[in-house]
Image 1: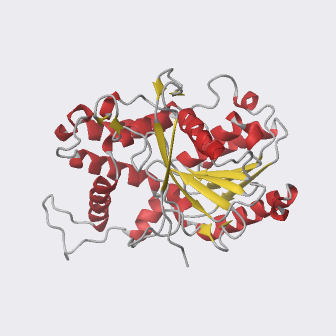
Image 2 (image 1 turned 180 degrees about the vertical axis):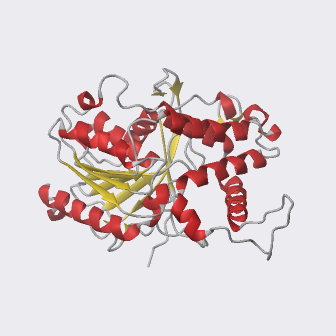
Image 3 (image 1 turned 90 degrees about the vertical axis):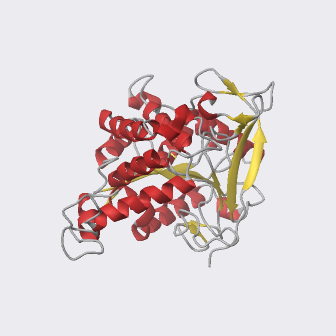
Length: 377
């Protein structure tokens, strides 16, 4: 049975000690929303940092009081689960630039007395990782047992391993890559344009006014198509009609898939900030782990052990991209295991393909914990 959890908040980098972003801009104070599950052992050696995906948040597991649904990765985090909270202390924080308690464009700009909106500085994957390092330091953790995430979360875990290699025993990278291709950037740009073309977006200044709901809905519909596979959509919807026995020969919703996408778009408007979507998707597009040299060079000196997991039906972050990462790691004699899971769920497999992932993650973490004798402390 999942437990009730409460979101916590950590504020750091007060002026004059601001967080220096990759762009050179200084930002402070900065607040990160985070949740923890399980208990930190006396040696503080059993901590696992979980990174969320693009539209995720700190609520990865358990239930908030009076909430119907658990956290977004609840099947993976908890007592006896893959990230076993009987053994491990699991942490998940909302990223910098997000909209679920962490400092982002919807947060109050203390200097202006109103939300930052587009005056918020552009942030990168690197900035998000540096911000979370402040949190881990605050918790008194010198070395993480592991860091893990799917999609954008995998990029964050990968960046942590390269940037702070001495603070990480292992990393689990799921359905991720090391840089966005032209196609991936193009898909994000269409989604951003849908938001910015909504007249209610008002150049980002919509707080306290009408939301850019239509643009956000279309953006989410576009995104959700990329998260599924052709086969999963065919199996779930096919050409089934919604609420009618024959075609209407008009522009109402004839097909179940149309109605489903509309529902997804509408629900997204109520739970996520449009500007945060712009900022976070841009951070994904900017990320390129190989930009300062070839990928193999990036991993020199990294002693972290890796588990890399991909899915056969993921066409958004296809397996070949992860194989490039694995090849670069092996060139540096890094201990890395690569597993491709056969599934029809597409990119969303990291959220729904629980059984296969759980076996891999549990086995991997058990081995890491034994190697560093973390279970004995």
